[in-house]
Image 1 (cartoon, rainbow, N blue to C red):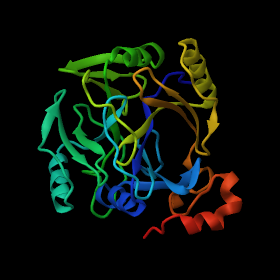
Image 2 (cartoon, rainbow, N blue to C red; image 1 turned 120 degrees about the vertical axis):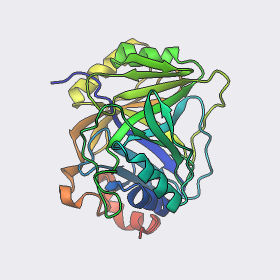
Image 3 (cartoon, one colour; image 1 turned 90 degrees about the vertical axis):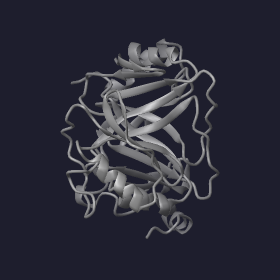
Length: 311
C-alpha cells in the first residue's frame, strides 16, 4: 500500500453558465463528462466532473456552474493556472483549434524547458497545454475531433500564487512529500516521485500580487490524492500536529474528502481513490444521467425543475 500523497486528485473551479461550461470542456477540449451531479451544499447547482474514460485521479477537473455569478479575481491565495499534459507535437493542433473556436490564447512559449500554450475558458479561467519533456503514458479521452495523437492526458501541474511561498512550501515538503525540483524567476516547481504524472505543483511568489477572490473563472480548491481513507486519516493527524484546522472526513459519494486552508490561503483537499465513479453508473454510461447524493434523491423532481436543461 502506498502511504504517500499521489499527486493531484482533482481541481475544482467556478463557472457562470452550465451549458457553456459543458460545451467548452466536452466539445472544444474533448474531455469526457464523467459525472453529472449537484453541489452537496447547493443542490440547485450542478457539479460537473470532466476527465478521462474512467475519471482517473489526476485527470478530473470539476465545476460548480452557478448561473450568472459575477467574475472573480485570480490572485494570491489561490490556484491561478491549471496545466494539462498533451502529446509531443500537438501544441500546433491546439493553437489552430483555439483559433477555430475563438478561444483566447497567448503565443507558444517555454517553461522549464517544456513547450506551453496558455489560454482561457469562456469564464476566463487560466489553462495551459504542456508538451512534457518526459513521455506521458496515460491514455486520453478521444472524440471525433480530438484523436489520441492530440488528446489531453490529464493534469501536468497547477500553479498557486502566493505572497510568500515559504509556508506553503513547508506543507508540500514536510507533510506531502514533495521536493523543490527547479526554479525560474519567481516560479518554484515542486515534484513528488510517488507518481509519474500529475505530480507537479508550481508556487508563484508575488509579494505585491492582488488578493484573489472566488467567483466565476477562478479555482475553488486543489485536491491531492491518497489511495484510501485510512491513509487519508493519517494525513489528517499530521496536519493537526502542525497546528492547522482541518475538517472531519466527508463522504462525497465518489471519494472521501478532508479540507484545510494552507498558510498561504489556498484551500486544499485530500481526496481518496475509493470508491470511484462507477459506484452508481457503469463505466460505459458515466455522466449520462443526473446522479444525486442520497439525501437529495427524495427531492429529485424539484431539483430537476431548478437545474438548467443541458442540450
